[in-house]
Length: 377
Image (cartoon, rainbow, N blue to C red; front, side, top):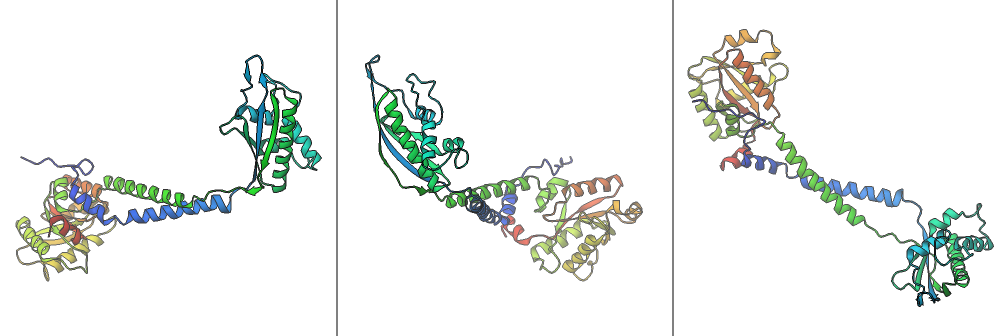
């Protein structure tokens, strides 16, 4: 009963081989983390140093608000919060219950004009609105009024004008007994926390995760072969052996397996064609494999073994059918770790359509260290 062959795109994953191959590329993960950290650091430096917007000068004023007694409610006025104060400072107070003819923003502009900052030419209302912020941290009687502007002198002038306008507002509004300025800090450049370390760590983590994802995805999409058992399971063909690259020593363990399999599996064939799935043009890879095969097995194919003839892919030659008819079968050479699964599948199918006996597969350019780890040698 024939064994069901598995296609390379739905075969059972060989976890041992999978993780051994991943371990060979494990160096990519720390390298990606370092690259990610460097890129994130460069981006942070460019965004916050080289191309950073102009730094603002900041000053804070503290004002104490004494609320008037509300006879209707029987308590002090209590509806002035941070939102209300920002509305009052930046716009009209027409929507509030307690109204006054004095507008804080108008007062600020008047005080700035008196200080030499004329509306339109030196400062605009929009700039003042964008520069100021009123906050009530906890106690509704204490206001922290902040001014932030790229111009140091203007920042201080706006703060002084706003403080004077707020004090004046307290005199004109029946909701207050008074608004008193407790003090103002010096105008200093805005302190921006250095988060370079955070950016570098984030970049490293992102590079680390990205590298793991790319490695797992690339391996999931990989149709290359690494161990003989996967090849046999995928193509339902015997692996005749593995060959190292030219110039590398072939371990006796794998040489003996190669010699034994060639003698046993090709004992009834006088000659076989060796076709490499990695030859896209010509037969260069097939010729290299035949030469390597002879050098590994011995000086020339030993007596009793089939003659091995290099041949190009059938699609590269118009007389492929004639050449195949002159041999007793074909051996396919598949390079380890090369993306050639689809081409190997296609080649096997084509050879069978042409009526050629596919005797087996030889794995070339084998990674002996990987195979030794896999087999526990």
